Length: 245
Image 1: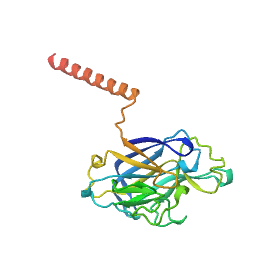
Image 2: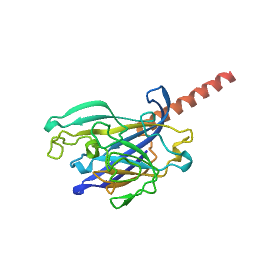
Image 3: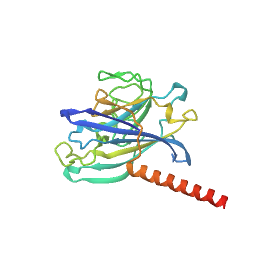
Image 4: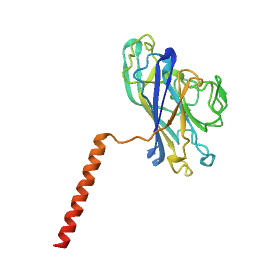
């Protein structure tokens, strides 16, 4: 897991997590090996449209090669919310990838392979791959944006009937999941670079860095592990005593 935080528009805190894990996914012609990427807005709330989470950029070794960017190798699902002039309408499991142009009918996200240049004063040359709705001219993406903030991710608990969100724009509720058909050369999540870049708002110059985090089990989990080890030790002890008698 990667986690990070920043300060967005109006000095509001922004934060997010990104997880990468191996799985199986059906891109339309049967289950294949894939990498699942979950991008989650973990801020307390999103009060401004320009603090919506809009993308993630990551780094793989050049030996992995390009990732598939079309419908046969890239997929995404999310719970979409349209505020409909103050009336919240939710629709689960909406296909949000891949997008190919700047239209409202082509999905919400693009997956692009680098190399990337600079945009909005920010250099993306250190990243080999990116998934985003807003690219603002970054090399590899079609047009300057896909659906822009219309497909941004808001934090759980946000007040979506406010003036900032009281429009007929579809937004993503808290988290989105992507699947990428894994090349045979992508054999381990350890191949990922030690940090990712998370973008928010309407341009690549709005971002923060998320670093790799080792997630420790909760105390209750440790208690279960300890109980299991104790039980195993007890059973081994009984077995040894039985063998001696």
